[in-house]
Amino acid sequence: MMPAGDTIAFIGLGHMGAPMAARLVAKGFALRVCDLRADAAAAFAGARRAVAAASVRDAVAGAQFAIAMLPDDAAVRDVMLGQAIEALSAGGVAIDMGTSSPASTRAIAEAFAQRRLGYVDAPVMGGVTFARDGTLDIMAGGDADCIDRCLPIFEALGRHTWRCGPSGAGHALKAIANFANAATLVALLEAMTIGRKFGLETAFMADALQAMCAGRQHPLEKKIVPQVMSRRFATGMAMGLIAKDVGIAADLAHAIGARASIADATRALWQEAADHYGATRDQSEVARLWEDAAGVDLQ
Image (tube, rainbow, N blue to C red; front, side, top):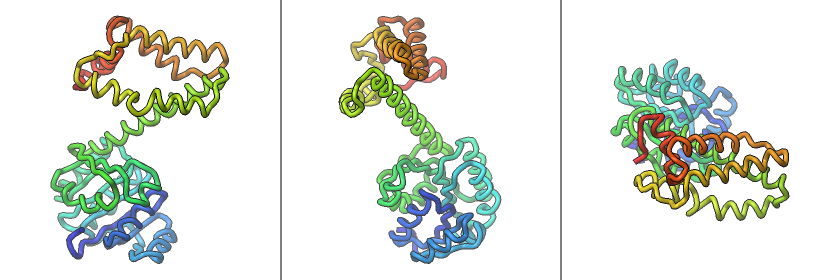
């Protein structure tokens, strides 16, 4: 639990902010809440042991921690640099738990550091249900000591806190995690609509793809961790054969009149890798297409 007398200002009582703030109150934290909708803050405070503040400045004044759960960079900059930085207690810590640009986060953190205030980016992964039951995944970036001070808050809100590195690292991990999830979602939707257009049943495809693409067959578990990160590159499947198979899926989509934008792009990428590195190289070596372009490796 937080040291006795510590107060948390919680700014932003939207779909995620409200259940997160409610979780903190239920865990015994002292909260002052604020939202652009004054009636929302008043209703929240009226239903729980919390204080509604008329403004961000009033919420943050004298608080040791200020949490923002806001929709975008502009809102975070306005709250943090326009009001919170002036009102936060000496030595206090501000925490951005929304999804913001890492570059913007670093700039705000530098401004806070100049005033000897802490700033932690700690975006969360998971929806409203996880916010309600305190099982969010939290990605924390910033000074290690500041993150340590925030751990009681994070432990009340989430099942695990990932220490990502310096300022902005939490937001970077959140962005790439959302990108990976979003890309996987649309790839599966395109694959299933191609299959449905061909005549496969949706429920059947869902069961089959669950078995063939998730769990032990998921690319992260089956290929990236054991093959790419180890540099073994030995799945036993040639890159050219994957390029061929993706091409068959793309050609099928075109033949039956299904959308194939992701399939076409995927075919082009695999063919580029096969042409550049050799069609007989292991499929996991497709990673080199991105590694070489970025000048990094995923070891």
